[in-house]
Image (cartoon, rainbow, N blue to C red; front, top):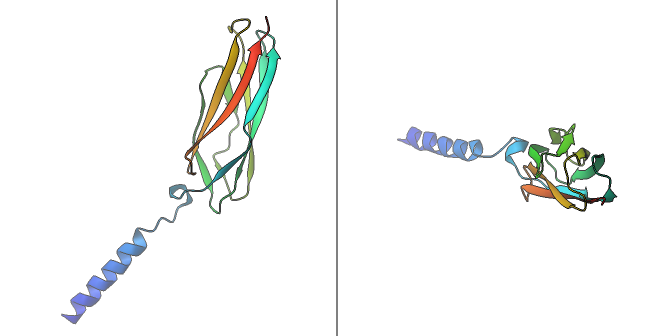
Length: 132
């Protein structure tokens, strides 16, 4: 009977220990936006715009990008990393193709970064107007 209590106690302790999340990608950290807005102002029609955003992992765990995407197919994220270790700064480079956009059109585009952070989704913004 004494052995049964010992086995139950060991199983209970093991279950508490086994439920503890040990992988960084299951934990939640913090992604700080250092440069999250980019205003190109007035731009020429049929041009390629290039810019960047700056992000930093300000938590003690590694942050993993789950998805990085834009509202518009005209925006391409260039060479994103898969993860950021604690304290690391990342530059997300992007390009925007204005081909087919209408003169005088004001574009307000967002890029969304989803990571194991709180909040899970960070929004970065791009704005410009096509010359008339």
